[in-house]
Amino acid sequence: MKFSILLFVLFYSVYSYADTLYVYKRSGQLVKIPTKEIDSITFAEGPKVTDIAGYSYPTVTIGTQTWMAENLRTHLYNDGTPILKELDIDLLPQYFNSGAYTWYNLDSTAYSPNYGTLYNGFVAIQTTKNVCPIGWRVPSQTDINTLQTTLAALAPGNEGGALKDNLLLFWTPPNSGAINSSGFAALPSGFFNGAIFEGVNNKASFWSSTPSAMAPSALTFSVEYNTATFSQTFRIRNYYLPIRCIKN
Image (cartoon, rainbow, N blue to C red; front, side, top):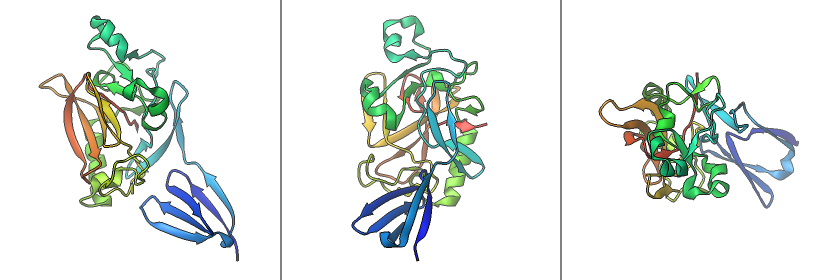
């Protein structure tokens, strides 16, 4: 008896080899289905959100929160105001403490589709403008703490692994603990520290909207290729990192 399959593409990775269909579920579980038993396959996308620049992103619900499942790509605040490019900051010192963006290795074609745009911390901590789509925001420290608590319940001791994409297409091996059971699918986008680009394939760090009261820095949360942990740390605002928005 043949049957039809409906797959939500955000939650599954699907491969076919010889006469078998291999389906990797969001939990990391592998399901093998003989192709002779399949009548049809329908791929369906989950809910999406679109930013002011026209980029659309899949979303995922993790516990009580709804997150973007891809890194932000826009070059505009959600009121249409352009964000400065990093090069403009270098050339115009009067804008040194302004929001700006760039792409890894200054190459939007190679890196933006998978890793999104890198923003400095001044974009993330803006209180008068919002880089996220209307109805969404840059996550606060409270949001990140809630996410970490949810991940701890979902995958005790493996919070970082629950956050990371579990395929080796992007992450450097061993991609420790990666099961992507949250559906967040963090990718190792690397960062720009104001002088050099580094960390691609090895590390994913994301801005929060929470500034430090002690120094010109802002809170970030990170996962890495060689550990299953989920960490939070403050970085100076002149670093360039990706942003994952959270729904209001």
